[in-house]
Image 1 (cartoon, rainbow, N blue to C red):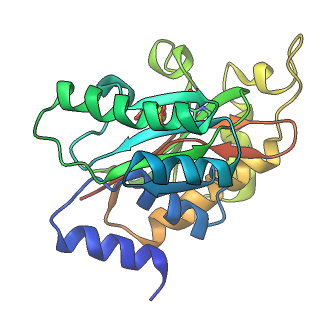
Image 2 (tube, rainbow, N blue to C red):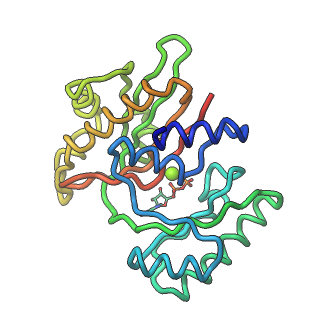
Length: 231
Ligand code: ADP
Ligand code: MG
């Protein structure tokens, strides 16, 4: 059986609806969606060793089935620069999460490659009661939350659909090279949209998917956070 089916079946068996970031990113990787390198650590020393292997700086994140919005729980530390900082960070994250939700079940701390800062976009999917699986695209932050500048298509989508989803946004000029910002790799973003479309068609039990954010680069793109919710 492939990795995606294995992960989804395992979650179902355990009665979990929200996949862990590790699980969601493994699924993304299997569908050819670029994600930051990551490793799960169970203690501070292990985390420091993994960080040295991945290369500094790293990002540390809580992995818990009870914490969906990790930064709200103080569960994300970016730009962690040394093995000693990783060990401190490991302790700090567990402390923060304990304060936020004392009975949260902790799987471990994710040590991941720190992606270079860039224009942040959001790739999403929702299962609409009327239209079925749909794919969503928008720019990160205020563009989606405040301005609702997003595009939707019913899945499955073609590469052409994916490109239109990107170019039809009001904020598209920001992706097409604006002032000091170099143009984003539209083909790379379109190929992520198509991969998400394939994934949600293959697994209709996926109710929601959120790649938020995806860093858009002049060449390529990288998914920094991934969330998948099952029916
Ligand atoms: P959540 O959405 O659950 O709060 P995220 O994983 O999205 O947590 O992390 C919060 C923010 O931290 C992201 O929006 C991004 O700006 C930054 N971030 C997270 N992981 C990375 C990474 N690997 N590289 C660079 N920045 C990151
Ligand atoms: Mg996020």
